Image 1 (cartoon, helix red, strand yellow):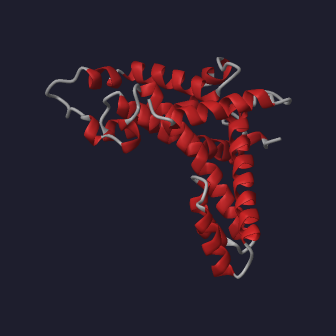
Image 2 (cartoon, rainbow, N blue to C red; image 1 turned 135 degrees about the vertical axis):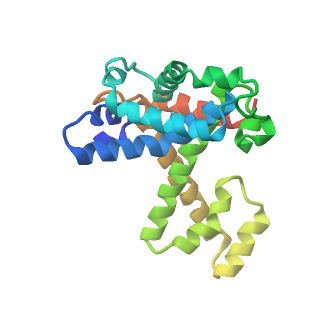
Length: 236
């Protein structure tokens, strides 16, 4: 099971602990995984870059200050809870409404000026989902790279990493086998292990966002979230 501060529901609670180190670690984990999706949601609603950054910083600071965010938490998907809290916060700040109806006071944001991952998003919520999915995948990839580095296999990871995105051509296996002086089967095993570990790390990251009590989420819940992750990456 994930540690206390790594589980996002528990992480929100940890930010109200008396231990400053626990609070700092919980806040760091939350920012790492959700600042970008929140920023993307604001930008896709027409908030310009500077205001979006300011709102996100203020929102995450409020997560520490307001205990009602913990008291009102629901079971289920953490990102749904967080997006709802962000919507309420932005509405209270009134900057989101001004951005959507702005005239001459503030610069109008066009789709061309937004982050590339927003261009294929049909709605702000979809943009948030895509940013969440990309963040989860990057978290897993970074952890995987760190594991290879710890075993002094950083070069191997750099070589095999492109194969995480799709099934390699047979010629690619042969090319690597010739370069390393091993059989093709050995290369396939290395790729299989890389992908298998990546899947485990993605499941772990997903599980963190669902855990609400000691028992944690079911594997069915995790499977559904993984399906949602790939749906979010699939475009409109």
